[in-house]
Image (cartoon, rainbow, N blue to C red):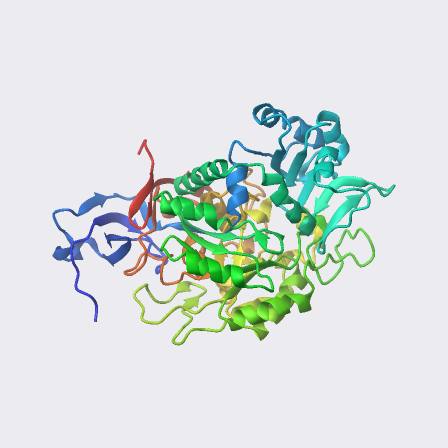
Length: 569
């Protein structure tokens, strides 16, 4: 029996309410009591008992009221850092330009401190080509420089940085990583994959706790301004026992009532699974919680470190198929006990062989469910609302999934595995899929339409700082298959894989909630859900697809509290 209604704290009325349960917005009112939605329905049917003397009533006109955007995949520490005064973020036009752009950072940071940046992409430069430490040495011979690539898989270091980190010509990289060498066998300053991740904690160690807290506050506000109410912080593994999920910083903000996002943490999956248990015991509030594990299975296609079944079309050597960062047997040995204990696992798998092997493991080791758990999600979104007696089923998730072996799409759907994808990755490297994988494999790249039609749950995110956190450009790319900045290519890349606006918004809300293991809590406007909501104007459902980016965030609510409001509205 439903609980009797009492006066709401907030009533929001709009001619366009997108609950996530329908294909189009409807005229409706959403009632909030405390931090949760208590009623949703037609405005002329609002129960009178919801209106009390202290109830705040707001008429949003024809602005779109929708569930808050939930980024299913970001790296919070790095995103906050690279948008702060502590570092810089840029691609550069070429190697020399990237070095030149270090000057403002060098001027504002203390003498002798690290110069840290993120964003360079050698394949977008003119001329293209991998950089080396020589250009950095010429400009900064006595100051350590660390420039993280745009895909966050490669570090470009100068000689001073190599020396400070203790890397010599005799050094051996850790498993799953590499140090590039030139034709004479000397270090070039390029450090890849696990080797780069291992070095990052030592590079950022000079930043104080207060500096990092300021960066976290600022980035959370940056997210709220873009309509984001929740995030999945998926760890970048640094080394065994150390990851970049900084629960200490989140907890400090939460204790000071300064946490303005619903944060779901996913620390690195190791043989010792105690980190997740400790986080779950310590973080029990509604805003901050730990929901599962994360691991890496391969790298990225542009650097030929994604694990593919057949050699790359532009193979650099015979049998150039990339490689797993963790051997399949070792990955299965990590996943099996975690899944048996009921912990969902999220695995980075970009290449088709990494995806295939990941499916093998997840099929053999589904997440053990609590009694009464049920799976409700379909391709169109969850089939039930928040007021449910049974707990949602926990699900494994594969991250990125850039190219498929064709039969694996049906396997993904049948196993109920979530596809966590980042729409703006589609257009990061124009011509890259054709160059690296060849025309035969291109039709199976980021196949959003096919995935949905096959019954797969999509969860959208940005992989920030790899792409900007703003969800509206990502929605535009999913709907048009065009780059949000250049509007290219004309007609869209693989236009048959376009999805509708409603489907894209569901992937960014209800789908991301499923990936976060928070189905039944967030992602829909329904009774029992947390009142995490975003208001957009103009309503994107009234715009042509090409004009979706005209929609601007007007108000963002987290738990019924305004965390951002546009000042000129």
